[in-house]
Image 1 (cartoon, rainbow, N blue to C red):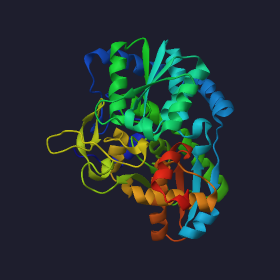
Image 2 (cartoon, helix red, strand yellow; image 1 turned 90 degrees about the vertical axis):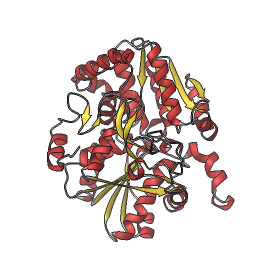
Image 3 (tube, rainbow, N blue to C red; image 1 turned 135 degrees about the horizontal axis):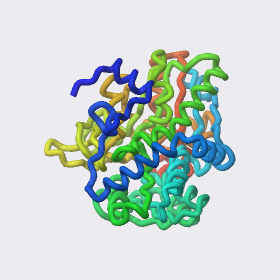
Image 4 (tube, helix red, strand yellow; image 1 turned 180 degrees about the horizontal axis):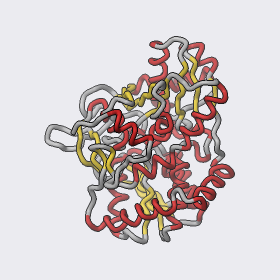
Length: 409
């Protein structure tokens, strides 16, 4: 299906996307069992009624300020800029409560779930940050929380498993399928199907059936709104480029959305290049994928010639997913956002670079964006680049200690 880039950008700016069917151009929609349709329709009605209502926004804003710690800082990385040759600014989502951008969405959806009368919350997690955020938000609001997490991810993200349990969540290991984020989403959906009205599924990324991609984007767009205003105030102009890591795509769409209408700003998403371009060796969906349906939405997927979803690889658990949000698929299709990938080694090198130059330990997910920033800086000496630092890397210490030389850790 062909799309007109000018019309799409106008529709995005005017708030006409997703459309009434939950589609971002040819992508998006709702592909779920019939038993989930009433729950999704109820959620869609709740989003329309509450999300932008003054009372909901006031409650959300108050919690974001007093509990989450927003606005998060915008930091000029002076020593890293001198080393890499461009002026690099970091939007510090690592400073948000629970250590990543995930809390913006988890808190907003938990508040919505309470208004919809949900009795329990289920969530999925890969790197553990969404699970921790969901557990924290549910503890704050007094809601029971069950988090599904792949067995592989539980091993490599053990600190976050402990945090979730300490916050009162029940963490359920998923041993089926690939035992990572994809399998965790499958199990959370199965749970929701068993009780679609009493249970609220707190989806962690800008994926899944409508209205989740829209809902998550709206809750995460606080990142880009803050960053745009902060950059204008501190630098007196917009950045030449904006960059974020992309797995499912929630931190990226939150950062990108407020900049989509700024024609002068280049927008770049960096996916997990893993070990290489071969199928199964990476999680770079927009670089190597094809259109298809996964977890209730039509988007770009990593699949074989027969349409079978393939296992993925990334050193970062949060990017280890074979799909991507439908809005990203559209932005890539029309060329408004350029998507590239960074390898495991590039990401690990970027972790070390930021630690030693700025005293900041980034999440392995965020390190992919930093790896892209290094390449961009080399091609644009003296340019201005705004990078979304989506989370902090405390959770990744077990992986970093295994993968970086001892003298680096």
